[in-house]
Length: 243
Image 1 (cartoon, rainbow, N blue to C red):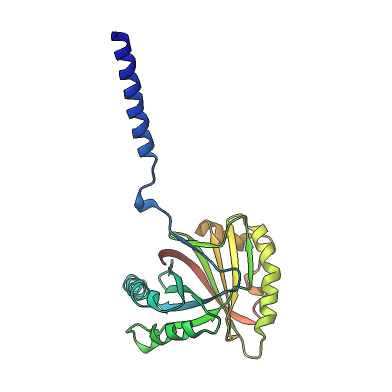
Image 2 (cartoon, rainbow, N blue to C red; image 1 turned 30 degrees about the horizontal axis):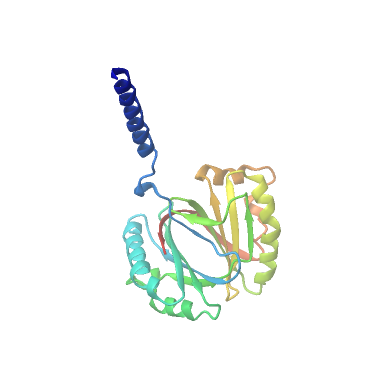
């Protein structure tokens, strides 16, 4: 009987140890990943709103934008989700939201209310676009909190056709994906007003992004877009997802 008691005690201790181990491996709520999928079926309208900031006021504007998206825009009919990004150099905050309804009625409601109380020179700029081309490295085009995202804004030059530049970018995207392992996916999103081509891409790190400029044959002075558009680009951190 004594041996049986010892054996039962050992089993009990082992069970407790296993339970503690399992509890230890459970992810805490704070570590849970929040993400949204970028629309690839051309059923949603994407709205990109770019808020100019400085390193001194970026945190304040970031908080204002997140609050506005959460309390106001998320209640507008057609709203699906929003990703809030901040530029790593402190120069901008971007809200990328997805809307249902190709007639842009939801976007128009959004645009009428999006401006924060900021000086005229700092009024944010919005444009609607739809995803036209995606390249991935076995990774779904998702936005997740803490992801590193490159945002490029190709602003069309006078008398240049947006569709021509979009076709060139589509041809270039597979080559870049293969060239740089740190690039997980890239999405091209031409604006509906023909003024802009947006390019969004997820990178593993800033170092991976910078490695692109070191590849053989890369020449920043003779880039393929220079005849068509002025390109503004930078790296951003995804800081908040609103659903």
